[in-house]
Length: 186
Length: 186
Length: 267
Image (cartoon, rainbow over all chains, first blue to last red; front, side, top):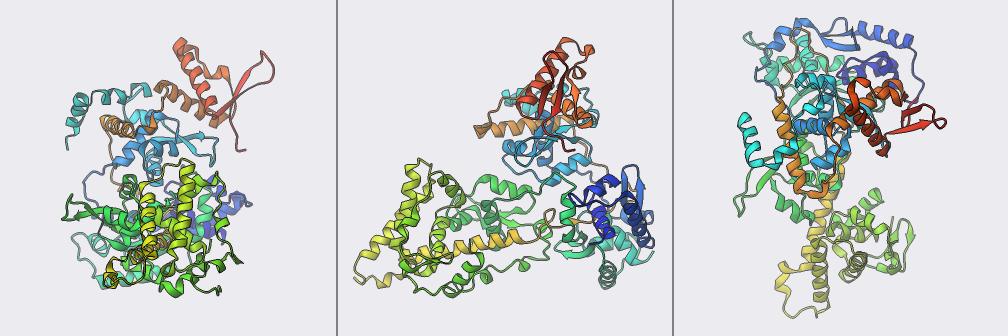
């Protein structure tokens, strides 16, 4: 497959801007194209989309496809203003990472008893709340996940120690848990 | 802006497949195009992408752009997250639900000859592939399980009829089983 | 193509080579037993395997022979003290019953009892199960999102700025975790002692630093401002990282600088 097609597919599959470094990474053990070749292919790709409703743009983190601004009025008709919510699976995964970091996906699965969907990890990474801090030296070298500074900021915490102890909550479920639930009362 | 461009932009902006209904919604208070017009524009759009690394496909939930399967080996170099693999028990349970829906857990157990682990059901629900569609009016009112539109979308299907026919897989046991075994021979 | 007479057990062809003596074939190395038990999805699956292995047609199974082999497995598994699911034993009893019925004289006016023929019932179940098994394989072979193909998307135009991401309240997070703990506690298999959060946080920080620098001196990880408690936390974190095999400590000579490195570095 030619370079331009590979980049095109990868850019559309990626949810974040792709850097030149990542584009090279696409080729794994094969010989990666040079930056010059990549930029040339990107320029040609950008031309291909000149007349379309999406454009290849360069932003801080690299390149990405972006829907043209002229679509804003149409897209606005689609959104209903109901605020979205994270699924319980996502919250539990985030909680596991916050409280048990650094932790692998397998370890999260062991406690949750359910496979953790790749999508969930991706959502949390995109949100900027978790990051890969290393790899565990066991079969498959699973990524070790931890929370970020952004996570602390967004939750108004100075450090992880300020996370309320969940263990205390289940010690006396009758009182604390009920209080907790009152806050969110379903 | 012409209809094709609007659809193109909206399809790329959406993470979920877009139904004809949603496409009409794009036009808000303006006069919406007819389904015929939309389908014509979609067909033309699909042609435009014929030679590219992405394709317009129709699945149960509507239309979406998809990156070609040929890109998978490249994309795999980018990420540590391996897509979840499902155990045979999970796949067999899913197959029972897909082919026999709506079905109770007891019915699945009767056919498989073993108890169905709660976790399997939970994994499939969490993945969004199955859901409870009702309760059987027998003792215990067991939940009736069925597959979701998301299941069809994720497997690239327009409807359940597109599932490979279980009957075809084993046509007539007396004659074809031997052939089957040759094919699947371990 | 295999051309053996149906039902002739002594002439089964397995993977191209003729078998005349099936019984020996039943031997399984003891350490393989666990693997084997894991590999089967239940008694029907095991039976199906026994039948397929001999290239036999399900509807012509020789119940006596299959029962013998099945019992052989069960006996082996029991001898190895594997916890057999009750289903396996129920099946053993069922097979034994079918076998004993087969030994009885044919007629005795039981022909009107066709519907209750346990052999027919077993064959029906085997055929039905095989269908599910093959459907499951076919399902797994189908292209699936994220594994075999990706959804193509482009960033929404700027001003529209995608519907704000979901907001999460700290208490929601704590609640999710406490519920998770409560659930994990029910299936008490996961009684793992975890270090204090401060240690785990420090572990993450050390790993994050190592991602940038690949090698750090131990002293770089201690900071005077944190005081004694901070040093203890760092120290515990490093020990835990080493214990979990995530980092190694390297010292060139006694008394010289100690370095910490990730276990393997992709260069």
